[in-house]
Image 1 (cartoon, rainbow, N blue to C red):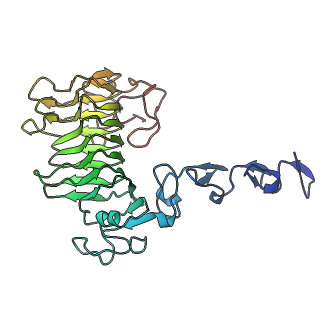
Image 2 (spheres, rainbow, N blue to C red):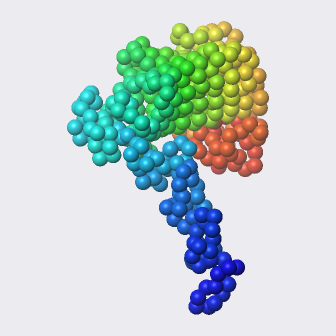
Image 3 (tube, helix red, strand yellow):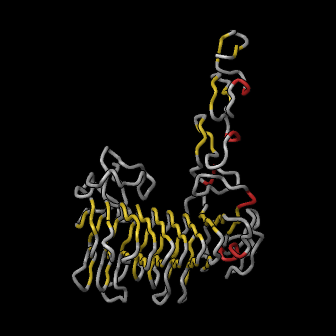
Length: 379
């Protein structure tokens, strides 16, 4: 031990930072060299000091700029554009806007995107008035849009006409904690992506007159997403790459709808992972649940109560791995969570393929074995 503590003249690891080296700090209460003492000692993708170890942020309140990025970093104040439809000066149609700062936010997401410049983060507060549709069409840019309401309320994007609620063309679009809603049977898709890198996290897409999520080319990542009550659920066309996990695709389509597939349609050229999802109560003309045009794998997933005019009620062409086609006694407040009676799903999933968390952000496994579907049962 290189240092001598004055007073009791005990040899210790350190009495100040000079004794530590390697960028470490001296924790003077215990006289130990540690990674950090305060969050000022951290940065990058691990900006928060906890237990003398730097980690990624877990909530927007941990970041001085008011936004915790998906990679765990805390963007600088000047890198975040703010949106609040309830801000002073916002007209009922959102035409009057502020300056995009936290104190004077824009009124619409679309306006924030038009004024993004070199910034790549948009913080959206919940609003009594739903936000209007928007598009992201740049080939070179990347934007990350977050719902940041501290109380847990989720801002909504609403399309009541015939257009798509959210569109992405050729760019990189990430949406976290933002809901997309449609209220017109003749409206377009909830989210449509063409040759786009699309990422949806902790979002809900509902009520669209077309598909909840439609993508052709590019890539689609969906984690902890609810796709509910659309004309069809998730439609992936062409050579799109996908990663869909811990998501609920339910109540999409009707037997009399124009959608060939109610739940999930994967084209023959689509490649990726479909793991720990709950696909229930969807209706389509040819397939109710999941259509795998290229024999794709459906892993650790629940398919139940899906209907179709033809024989493909639950699935067609899929390679089922550690999945269940059958009733699983779902319940909870939303009706899609496992219960004590879900014996066919509890403990029946593959540990090798399971994500580390479930749709609610709770750790997998709970109790030593992994469960089928988006929810991990943890009594």
